[in-house]
Length: 578
Image 1 (cartoon, rainbow, N blue to C red):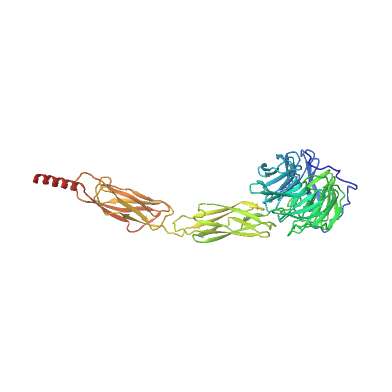
Image 2 (image 1 turned 60 degrees about the vertical axis):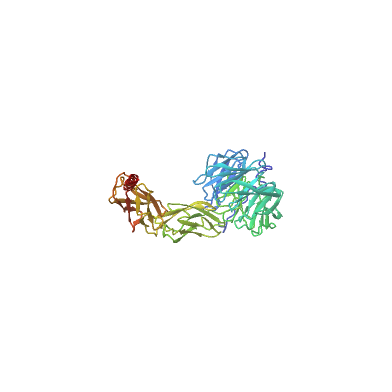
């Protein structure tokens, strides 16, 4: 399986342009670029000064070092090697450090990152291998999609991926877990590269035979097709989605785009470039600086810089560190179709609050910077308060519209008529799309109870009972449901003796949420003839409630043994009389 159509010398004719001053061009400070070489090395590029930094070798390749992509914070790059591996590159130090490679499911060639940076998307340069998503935290494959695919580009909406193959273009769904599913495919030209518009409503197919086609998202309905440079290789789209720059083998063109309709216009300018581009599937051989003010074209011996407005050659950045430049990428976009120039962070702006039952609290969240795409933040909730019973949260998934810096959620605290201790609810920014989690990432609301302790009283089902009869029921009743178990300790007095003349509970427990509990008082038959005896019951101590009248009750126990003796005597007297 070949990963390229054919490999040409990387320069033709004059391999250098005289360096010229950059003049008034303004480039993004803080951004970092990377150039990949076809000899297993990489070199950093600073677009603010147009200077190369340190280089590093050691990428074991199988004929080509392929594409690269850089995390939005500029800390890590990922480089393909067409050898079932991706090499991470640490960009935090003065010199790039190439890390231990991790495995892929195919001879990796084209690579991209999802907008939230959680998943790498990688594909091979030929058909028959899967399109894969790889978890950047664990660096393991989480999803393989069996699909003839030469190229991959993540849409900024975080839900779609555009891929291409010779003769077709694909729209792929990706969920929050990195799982890939084919949405649909449609016929396209001799596709060598494919892109998603910054507004995620259009897919673009770059045809090697010399055309740019656009398709609607979703549906992939054809929108337009225009001729472009011969042997088209790769492209870059500006952040506004109003221009696409296409690099061919020896020519570069700029085509206007209509972001509202997705249509592509005839070339605004076409210029010959002094360096040939090798025909690799998917590898980005042209990039915009993160602020869109310069076009970069790597080649054998350096990187050519063009003016995006006119296509005029600005300078050629020559360096021995770029012996065979192939791919180029920048942090914050610029490599492939720009997604977001540095992801913002989402954090809570509201401090910790206190609210009483029945009140509502508005919680404010903010982004560290404006985003060109919607930012979705999911809030998780925990704490001693129970969701839906003690409070409700609206919404739990918060969306920042493009350009918005603030969004709110509302906590409505329930007035539940239960006497309760102080409770709390803690919100945390758990997951996000198109943003990182900032600080503070948690918020606490303490909920104060507005209910007094319930009142407890005693009730009996009858004031008299005979020995051996059905028991009398003793009920401890509350004025309202309790939030916690109510403990009622009982005391007994009177002429009747507990355990001898009757059995009775020492205490009554009323479960939380209930309004009463009932126990039995049973009069005992003792075989003794005696007068009626009194049981006086009173509340001795209460926990989690307040005693109220009637806090006592009395029961008269009638002797059943005297009745038996009288009955026997009456029976005997009747017998003698007859």
